[in-house]
Every structure is written in structure tokens, then in C-alpha cells.
Amino acid sequence: MAVYLANTGLEILLKDGSLDQKQMLEWFKEAVRIPTKYGFYATKVLQSGLTLVYRVVAKGSDTEIAGLDMHMSGRCLWSAKPLVRIGKGEALSLTLLMTNPSERSAFIATLVHAATLEEIDEDTILNLQVCAFPQALDVFDSRQAYESATDEKGRLEDKKLLPFNYIMARDESLSEETRQKFARDEQMMLLCGPVLAVEERRHGFRDTLCMVATIATEMGHLDLVLSAKQLAKPLQKGSYVVASCVVSADVLTD
Image (tube, rainbow, N blue to C red; front, top):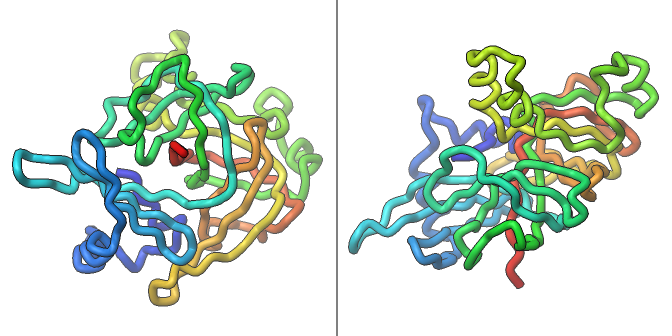
């Protein structure tokens, strides 16, 4: 389950360590149903573009909500080729290591609405609408400021996407214990890039809101979904960010 309450400013949904079931069921009833062979997705889009994707599986004549994912709708589009499935996966969910069509860049993303695709293989070109949820983020005034603050050996190339945990989990020079630690979060991406735009988006639910910062990457533009509480310094157009993120991608089938 991929729910990012801190990023989206929706901590209000957390009650006694669990999601507010009354509100979640209300949104579920309002959601648009997208059928699959194994059940359906119930998709609720808030005013901000934040999308709640309920994954519902068939259990004989009954159905069961198997999981919930969050995604931010937007205009950041990537084309990608699948390479390897990541992790054990959950019902109606799929996380993949992918490249761009020229195979010069690699990234990991979790696909929402993955089961709407008839097939996925290495010859498939997927058209994806993408966003990312930073779990750690550093803001610099510029690329030059980032380079001045970091050692060259540990510095990311400009606009780089790096599946760092995935790589480290397979580094045989590391101990088995260390590799397992990286493997537990192998979907996490390291990335950096200049900020092209920053906007505040209100969800239309009480007074909740989040920020969306669009950055440039080697794959194309990418929307970062975050809360002002995650920032140690102001984020604005022209800033430079380095972040550890989970990338979410919605498959475009039209």
C-alpha cells in the first residue's frame, strides 16, 4: 500500500494509527470504477489532482479492498520500456525497473492501474504520467551551490535518476545484512534537478493542501508531491533539489 499522508498534508486522515475508515469509505463510494480481469480499481480524484486508487479483488461472488495507492495527476509524461519486476508485489499492483526507449536512463516506478494493460514485456513501450513522493529532500539555491556543498565522488550528475537501493542490494562487495537493508526499500530512487515551477494545491477536503514542484530530469519533467513541513528552506522556481523518492506512474492506454 502506497499512502503518503506527510507528503500530501493529509495527516488528518490518521486516527489512532489507522486511516479514517468513514472518510475512506465515503471516497470509495464516490470513486469511478475501472474493471480488470481480477477485480477493479476504484479511482477518486480530489480537487488538487491527488488520486486515490483503491485496488479491489474478486473473492468468489464477493469483493475485497486489497490495497490503496496515491498518485498525483499532472502533465509530466514519460515513455519507458519494462525490464524487471521489483519486489513480491501486491494485488493489482506492479513495480518495475524500466528504461527510456534509448536505454540510456533507468528508473523504478510503481504503476497504478497496471492491470488495465493486456500484457507487459520487454518489447512494450509504456506511456506514463509520472509523479514522485520525496521521503528526503535537500534544497539548494542552484546546481553550483549543490556542487559546492558536496564531494565530487558522491555527487549526482545533473538531472540524474538513480535506482540506488536496487543497485546496492545487488552489490556483492557488501555484507548480506547490508544488502538486505537496501533491498527492503529497493523501489526508492535518488534524483536531482532544477525546479521549473512550484504551486500550492488544495484538496477540497477541509483545509488540507500540498505543494507540487516540477523539476527537470533526464527522463523529462517530474512532479514532486510534498508538504511545506518537509522543507528546511524555501523551495521556489530556480532552486535545485536532491531527493530520495518513490516514483508513481499511471499507465496511459488511449
